[in-house]
Image (tube, rainbow, N blue to C red; front, side, top):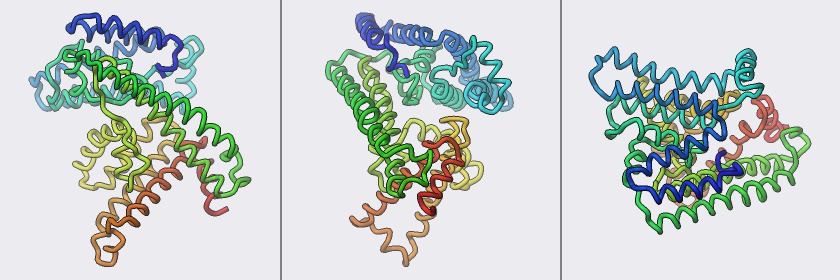
Length: 396
């Protein structure tokens, strides 16, 4: 993460000083230059490849936005614009786990170290969003400088949120100094640091260590300890990632920019659909718009669409099969919820579907515990270890 680098605090203060001392017309360029300098400091090879990709995606997106191509050529240009970033993502993030020769090749190129380009998952999804919206011709007028500022923005580059071009790019020319927004940004950063450093790294991590290394030998622990360990793992993920998101959002506020929220109290939601509208909002909404709706439009089957969306969402996190199992777990839960929307209309189930206090508490308990148990897929090494864990928790 960018926020963990030793030079980051000094870098941020210096950039803020130059940014607000510059004229409104220059602030976008100051922010872009600062973003690229920081990325180059962290990994110059990754930055070079990133800039090449930016030029490639922008040029093809520009052709799509012109509206002069016939339908067949538009499809070809769109396909070319999508395939290259996706192949880039697969080459660096997924294929090394399955193809040792590719890992060896990348290690030789990077002087013995396999360097995963910083923020690759986030900027790849930004590229996909950009070219699809170029194809739809929904984006505001802009140039390459606006596109580069959007995709390289260091406040959200490595940890999100995955903001949309149409919402963030116009702000580059309209951002103004507002003391109340700056103060809000500082408060948000402090809140995020408390989540990350105090709650995640100290409190929850200490609780996990106190329970023990349950995945190593789940049969040696009680079902209560196994369940508590999963709950702590879920809380660790939540406080860690939502803390980073708060820092990213707060830092953006310091520059007069408002980016989308990424978490909205997901652990108090009463059904799985509401949970996914509140957890990693920028990613789940991306999958909704660019996977769920297209698949649903092609199949007219909401269950196929939800499985496609959640499998993409899971695979976005990593190439290990455990992420596909995690995606399938949540897709299955959402498919059951979709069926419940039909079943609850039946007279025999009307009482169960009423929104009384008991129904709300029951819905919350089912949702949050389903999510907590689902953490077994991501908190263990592989699907076999996860299944072993579930066996001892529920059967053994």
